[in-house]
Length: 286
Image (cartoon, rainbow, N blue to C red):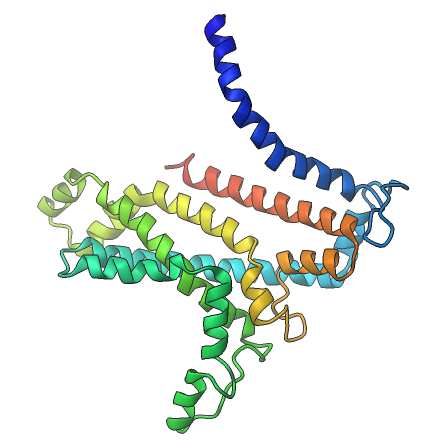
């Protein structure tokens, strides 16, 4: 009994910190989402129940933000996983100077998202950017990479992948380095070629690590805000208006904190459902 009490006493500081920085903000946001609180009228009453949730889904701009966020997340997660798996497989081989490649690969991951956005905003500038300068010198027309509604979302997604692929590569490379060698050796003895060993032996063993990457990247991409704020401000039009940025605009431009809290909980629930789906698909059948 004394050990149990001592354990709880030693755990109390950590529990108190978790309650202060996690539980309290979540609980406060949930309470606000059922109220009529705004920055113009900072009062909780009258209570409106699920009104803000219903009005959110009735808003075509919010539904558009959900669609754009789903498209953006699918594109960035899939591309990050494919590129990360390719780079990790290459670096797993006995390549000369692998330490140099590790250092170069880690650089994008070490830059803050705002820094990444500023760098690429200069590179892709329609008049002063080096990309358009090279295109003009090659006889090609200038392109407003971040101003075209047809491709702005995918340009931002490619910039995001440029930064995130480092983390994906390192996680997958750690998984490859920790793999047992016996299954690969047995497959080689049985006459399997390199492609068969990769798809029939390596990928199934690497499946739990791929599941971790999918969960982490999905959470990261669903809450993307920094790149959108610096690069496009949700434009042109609403073509890059991701959910996180839409919630920010609702709270700090529309001054409607209650509506923004309700939409933030919608984003939280969407993220949790996707994480549960990945977990059930990857780990329960692994």
